[in-house]
Length: 239
Image (cartoon, rainbow, N blue to C red):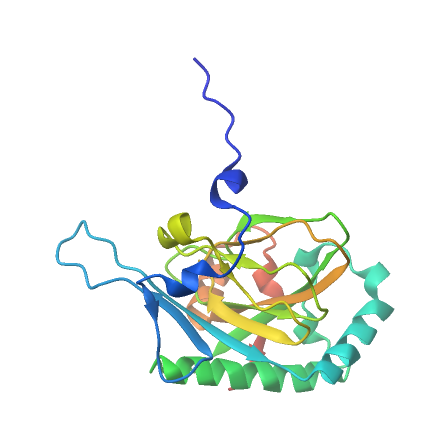
């Protein structure tokens, strides 16, 4: 007997009415509203779950978003496969890249500081555009799920009636997914392994997505890659 066809996006996604997951018992409130975090209780045996998912919620000035968007639109028709370029390597092409790197770096420092985590000496970054037209959606996915998984981020460049939805393991089943802010300039940093999705949008949506990598990831790639990998386009972030 063949297995039935299962649409896992339908299983994980239900249309939310509000951010109910903000009220679940795993929601962890720290010293700043910028840190949005879900943590389970410390397990008392090897079979009990342990979940710790910290998000960093930030923003950049709207007028700066408009500057970025103007430059992106000027080359939009030339942007092909998202895996074949790195926006943060365009320092000689667009002035906005320098300022954007500074703002993202500031968010990264604050994020790590709030978690009392000392950043590695070397961190790498790669960014790309996620441009969605009316009716487009982004299926559930994560950016990395391995021993060197690090941090990813999204910067929304346009207002949107649709939020990126982040799946909090187990808790999303009962309370729904976490809905990110959907205004122009909204920035969110999150662990790269966290799954997320974008439901069908009603109007064109511009989002700049990016990944941070540790030096361990880059070195592992250099030693083991058998072909091209988008990580090879990463640039070192000056910390």
